[in-house]
Amino acid sequence: MKGTVHHIEIYVSDLGRTTEFWSWFLSELGYDIYQKWKEGISYKLFDTYLVFVQTEEKYRDMGYHRKRTGLNHIAFHAESRTMVDDITQKLKEKNIKLLYDDKYPFAGGKDYYALFFEDPDRIKVELVAPNED
Image (cartoon, rainbow, N blue to C red):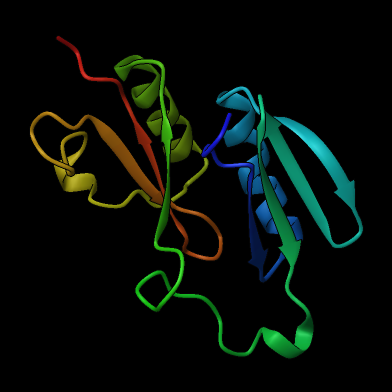
């Protein structure tokens, strides 16, 4: 598996809110909780895992913004356009703000069927359907 991503670790402002947000979404994609400890949680799918860690108080004052240097967004594969639509509906039911909602599902271009939204720290999350030929 040379070159594939092993894990991504993200520090978050509120681990409880982050866990609530990411747990349902990642389970929809097939991830399971991998590890859990007082300051963090990780989710695993195959050989890749995502880690969320509570930011220490002394480092929280700056906050996060995806347009600063650092992580801009995380994009995940969906199994189909139907999955993208189903997740979109679930996000709306949870009152989670969608990004580029006025252009959904083609905000990324006419052949790019995707959903864009933000996690509690405003990290952009993208769910992309495979191209239909």
